[in-house]
Length: 240
Image (spheres, rainbow, N blue to C red):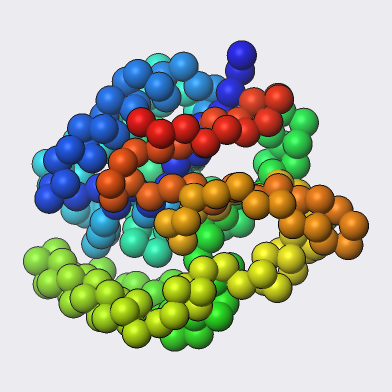
């Protein structure tokens, strides 16, 4: 049966070879049979710019995705918070189409909204402030003007500060804000919603203005790989 797959929050890095191999196996054994693969952000643990594609690890990931796209599987990529600097060169190397966050698609007759998910976490005010800064073109241009080694050092420092910030926050603060979810569902005329970011995989049903809206949260790949499979009959979360 025709179907589409969704993944996010893989956080691929050379330091986690078992997950990297799981990813390569997923592309070979599972994604090859899909119509489309949507990557909804945070494919990499860190991405310091498309000029780092010469790095052997980064190249291996991009080339594996390119092999998938060349096999006939449509591939899209949405930037997450970890790979916000991924751009046209990265997408071209992968054979992927860059899509906006959010993006509304017709998924086998069901209107479906795709997001990374971080914009739903509006209770985390400090993160939202940082998100605005990280997506500011002037900020990105200054960051990208530095040598790759310096960018990687700064990215590591930012990750450490992020982890310290998380430790000082209540768990619910870093999850989606229900009111924001309802606002988004209302704004896009009550679609199905698929997103990642929170690392809390689940299926939720929201009743908004008497409309029942399904929300799927994709799992992260820190411990084990997983994906969402959708077809004309609906969606199902699967683990690798």
